[in-house]
Length: 256
Length: 310
Image 1 (cartoon, each protein chain N blue to C red):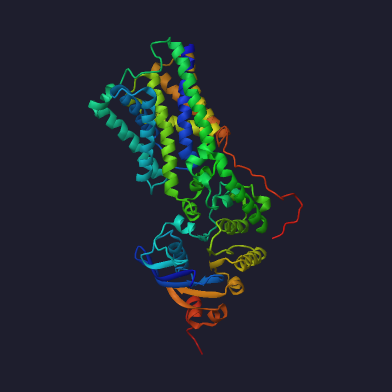
Image 2 (spheres, chains in turn green, cyan; image 1 turned 45 degrees about the horizontal axis):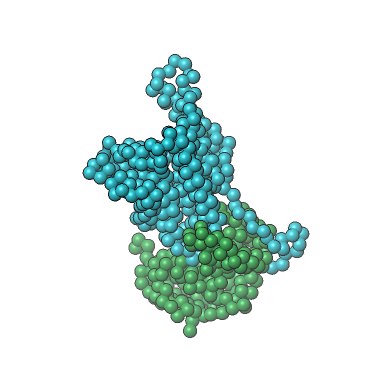
């Protein structure tokens, strides 16, 4: 059974249909790419799946559970974590804290523990610190761990986002344009990282406009246009698909 | 004069407790609350009414006032779940004014604008006024010390980290798996509880409360105390509170030295002076006297020059 099943998802904003019946299947253990021209509804699909925005209709089934309309924190708790297109985060927290925050099952988040027995949260905190340190090392963020997140470069912020997601020990991660605005060297580095994660058993669904990255990374590509599915298959198939070319570049008027 | 100084120290402690409470909601969680004085009033009336009318002992009365204020805080957090920034400020300001208007008009309960008098104080009447003042100062100072320790624990704990995350971006905090609403309700309740306790302490100290004490200006003093001391920093909250009391009181002695002004002009000049002091302070310390600091954690294997591998 697929890890994520999205069926006939609809969502409109003030009369504009952002999603008009989108379907998506994400198989475990691979990287699925979600592509499509601007305004196709890719980010809206992410928002509906991650609970940030409730869908008008349709169903989202994750890991055998119907999570349609759940709140974002409950969806996160069952192992589906997303990132945002513009690297969003907690600028006034240190990079370390940004990572630690995503750690789950921290008893020190309850007021009673925080006030009455701060020591009992420490063991979990030590585990989280060890994990954050390892993730930071892997993502080359060790030197900036104690800097405020606002001091990072754009590319480092993208790496931090990936690191935060990993802290939550998710089953599926949704990445919204993980390499947008990132320099070519770092783009390759991020691609290598993502492939490494999938080889270790993670599943990734990503939105990206950078076609080389899609070609290199994605095992399966789903094309969305005007709020619904246009086509899906391998990247090579999609690149040669006429409907997809038309959605991206328009119709060839003077075909010979 | 010594009674005056002790009284000012007691006010400083009461301000400090309020500033610590405000820091939880505004400093940590970034939620504007202009209704502090409303929770202060709930705490003050809570203890005054239960001790005067129901014969509660003082400790039980203060506890009741604190719990009522915390419950009111939790209620406000639930009502304003979707509000942020200016809108939250308007609603909380309105709420405090509503509480004041209600206390002025429910004459059967609160004695209206005449206020409630003869609120008991610990050993009041059995010891000299100076001794009473000293005793009360020791009492409130202990409470402030305990509140400070608890507030520091909250800040340093993962709980505080979640609140600061909510301050930066609520939606990302939710996606990170945090039940934002539950955290906001808790923060609001803790904050309102501390402020309510300050109100209860005030009532038992002065023995008299009336609606006209609970004006928005008082809320602004506490906000200024926290800003001057350092938003987000508990030490700053306490220092700022004493600083504000010092500004408010010391200017009282400066005005008579200014020649050829009337009493009304003197009062206005005093406000100008307080404002000028705050502007100068914040001009040179934009983040307050004790700015908030990021916690630094030791990083293993980060020796400079060591090659980094991915």
